[in-house]
Image (cartoon, rainbow, N blue to C red; front, side, top):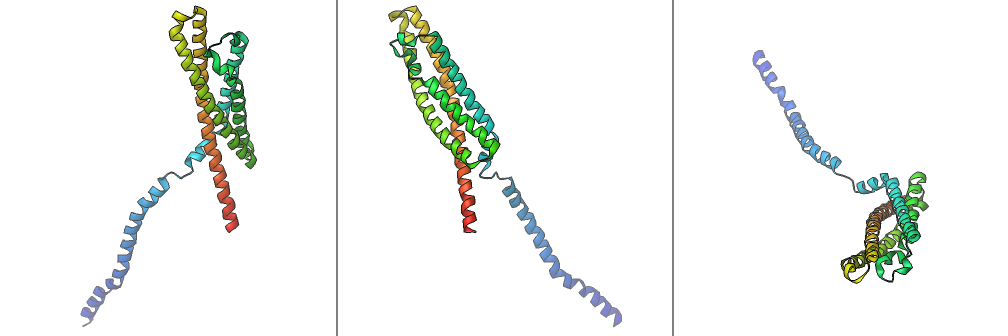
Length: 219
C-alpha cells in the first residue's frame, strides 16, 4: 500500500500546478500580442511633429525672410538709381512704380526678425507678434506676387512685339525688367512660403498655450 500511495501522491503533485501554468501561458501570449501594439503606438509620429520641426527651424525661416527682404531692396535700389522709370509710360516697370521692392522688403524684414527673437527669448508676446507680422507679410506677399506676375506678363508681351513697334533700347529695357522682376517673383514666393510656415507655427503655439491654460483652470 505504501508504494501505491506514494506513486499516487507523486502523480497528484503536478495537478495543483496545472491551473497556474495555464495563466502564465495566457499572460505570455497576451504580452506577445500587446507588444506590437505598444511598438506601433510608440513608433507612430505625434500630432505636433510638424510644430516641433518648425520650432527648430525658426531661426532659418526668419533669416530667409530677412534675406529675401534685403535682396528685394537691393534690386529696387539698383533699378531706381540706374533707370529713370518715369520715362517709360508702358507697364514694363509697373511693380517698381507700385513700390513693391521697398514696402515688400520692409514687411519681410520685420516678419523675419520677430521669430528669431521669439526663439531666443521664448516670450508669449513674441509668438503673438510673429503670428500677426507673418499674417500681414503673407498678405503683402500675395499682393506682390499678383503685381509681379502682371508685370512679367506685360513685359513678355512687349518683348515679343518690340522688334517691330519699339526701338531696340526699349526692347533691351523690357528684357532687363523681365529678368529682374522674375527674380523678385521667385524671392517673393520663397518669402510667402516662409511666412505661411511661421503662421502655422504661431497658431500651433497659441492653441497649445490655450490648452495648457484651460487644463490648469479645470484642475
